[in-house]
Length: 201
Image 1 (cartoon, rainbow, N blue to C red):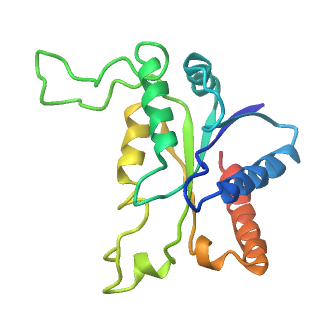
Image 2: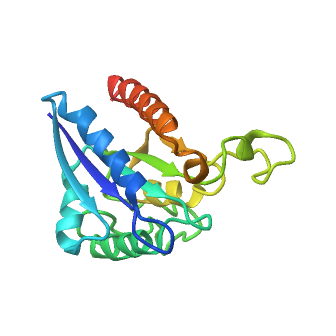
């Protein structure tokens, strides 16, 4: 039985109600619940967080699924705090033991001290930006993908812990384009992505 840990990084702030990422989490749980081969644990970063219990979820899981909106080209402030607090709790406690270097030759092996080897993670993000902003010549993100650009550091963070990345999914034009019709399309496309991803896990 595969063990799946789902983290909802959405939060209420200003004009954001955090509903879309809750919906994406619901879609994920709905998909996984159709198959008895998955055991699921979840966390919502707005809930009261016990750092040690969160560390134990990371250690327990075979796959961590992150759902997060992107605000000002970063994860939300509560999600960043969650990561800082939980990963710090995980030092020599299941997430990482060191930065991987030795004092004998401190120039090499940085980022190899993770303790979550054998585990994988998947990232979903939601954006106001349309997909074309990442692909068209002259548009805002200079033809740089979400994963190679804004979320590059997020992926390196997970690599630091020893986890292996599986292909994620990015929802675009959510703020202006989240019509009932587009929500149906979002779900269909995301479900297809999950089907392909879990076929190969």
